[in-house]
Image (cartoon, rainbow over all chains, first blue to last red; front, side, top):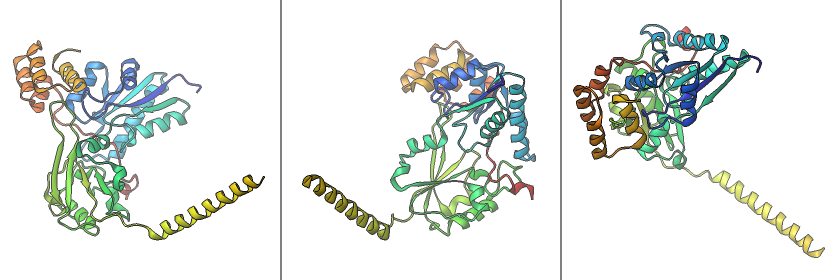
Length: 276
Length: 70
């Protein structure tokens, strides 16, 4: 690296005080300039107690303004300070690299311009979801989609695995200028999901706790209720598997054949060694 | 770090029992309304008393960087 400015994008985790890593904290306390974007106003106040000079990225958002413009302006605000030779810390809720365009873009841009830039992981809403709901993504597999992206593109859902949908509160928003969409948009999402799930299928509306004085939201709904349910910016939907795992007998047969071949080869090698 | 926010950090870091939480709140040198909000676990009132933002936006992912352009 040939330039003195640098960037560290760090995660605070989801819950105030509970999840921040020692390394993230060191970056927050030691940086020349701190930018902050979090999901709870009390968490923002917490960061401002650590760093009274922390600059909130909130002013870049505006209802009716494309979020892409907001994101680009957030990235540029950090880059301006990095180019001025400052050690910059971007503080984000959860994990700064999970469902988060701004930290990834800022790090990529900083590196392109020859600056040192890296990410410190944090405890994400996904991590909290596994703990709160008692789900192991390795049990049946787990698919994660941004809800609007699932609607915009032809994707193949595997109903024998968990399905997790993010940003459902603004599902179907093509403008990128709204922070919520209404029942009519969600009804289209329901119709899409009904191709793979019965309307009676259980769905959990999940929101991680952001404060030690609040509890996570874990409301069980039915797919048929989703269009009119209270789904917010921070709500994540979790669909348990709808069908059992189906064994891939063809692949299992091929693996068994391979096992036999490998076993015979090993026996032949042993015989040669014994003869010698 | 002191006050209500400092206490929330302490509570978050230590996972206090209800009794430990109530005892900790009683020891704080803070405004009575903040104390009551903490005891009630009323985040909205506490935020209002501390001057936090009324509304936060925090989506930082675009589902498709092209779809909003057509």
